[in-house]
Amino acid sequence: MIPRWMGGLARTACRLLAAALALGALPVQAAPNGTWLSQPQIWYYGTRQSLNGVMAQIRASNYRVVFLDVRKVSDAMQREAAEAARRHGLLPVVWVQSPQYRALRIPDLVHEARHGDAIQVDDHFFANYTLADFYWLRQVYTKPIFCSIQPFQAGLVPSTGCNQLDVQCYTAQQFPQCLKLADRLGAVVSLSTQNTLGHRSQLGARPFNTFLWQGP
Image 1 (tube, rainbow, N blue to C red):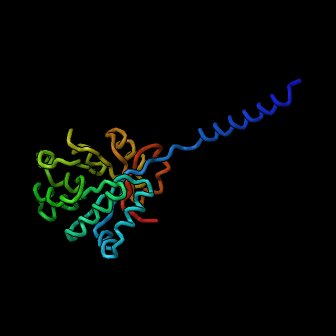
Image 2 (cartoon, rainbow, N blue to C red):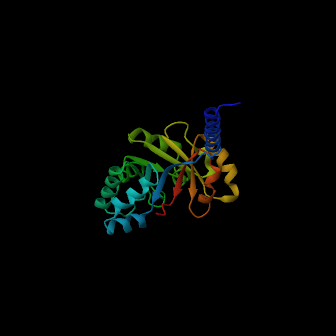
């Protein structure tokens, strides 16, 4: 006959084993990496003196990076957005949007990123500037460079110089192939809030960006 106390231990062990197996069965969660604030969003939060609040919300959602589109945003508001990000442990990255339409040269890109702690060049840059331009930027810009491409631009990725690369997986139909490309390039997966953010359960443990920040 098994002593009562041993039977109790066995039942406890079974419960602990079942709990451990249940925990082990939980799906691995994708890791938030960065989110974008557009030019109108920066204006909206800045004019309402709530940049500090939105940065707190972004950090509370476990993002580490905030990309800032500062076109035509006042110098003071640019500075405040970057400072608010830092206060909440976020890395403020200036997203240089549509440089080709504004005929920006490399020194202009560096100037636009003056209040950030890093710069992002995206698919528009890689479609309209040369690799020589990128390496010129890498030479004169001493802070991190974030690179963002569309899937068909994989051949335009510089061999060196991008501190972080992301692939814009914005189309649901091409989502599986885009994930494979991001894995091959060692890139972060960028999701569209309208088209692919709902597919983030398929990411496994991959880090992801969100375009754009939608708030709570």
